[in-house]
Length: 213
Image 1: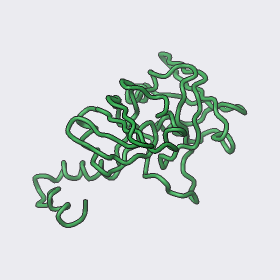
Image 2: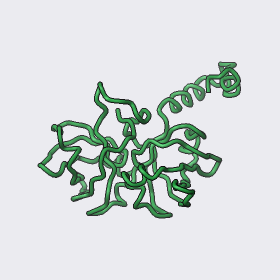
Image 3: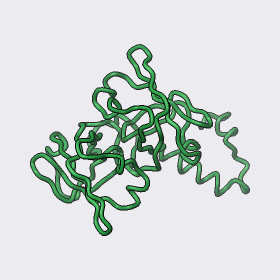
Image 4: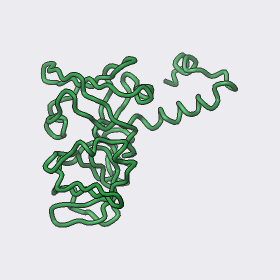
């Protein structure tokens, strides 16, 4: 489990995709302070398992499913990535519940300055947008953010200077792909309604009217 509060920006040391084995090596420092083989580290929001490490890097195996769901293949040597260690049991829950299981990718369609903040507009497939609601939470490349606006075609987030400086969002351009993870609680609610739609009198309107949403 992660919180979406980025601890460090690392950079890709090597990415290797082969027919039988694919690996990703990341150069970093802070993340390695207490690293062990088998630890989970979120790389741009993707939960990966440490299989090797040195004093200045770590390596993870990567499955084909991960490549298919994420923007890993758009990275190259020296690309910056967001890093977060799994949440400690005694840690502060500063962001929101992030599993590190990417739902898919979105595309940045607009970047606009607004005083000291920067707005990012992102489009995505409909199945992803269905899980994104205004004032709800979304993880973008592993960053816990609040959805400021959402409609049928896209959603927008407003990013403060600190987040921009400390994450890879500062390097993003219009047209870039980003990893998306929608809120896990919303996923369970969506599935529950899909399975019980014909047998229940409870509707989304009912939940809203009675303060559940």
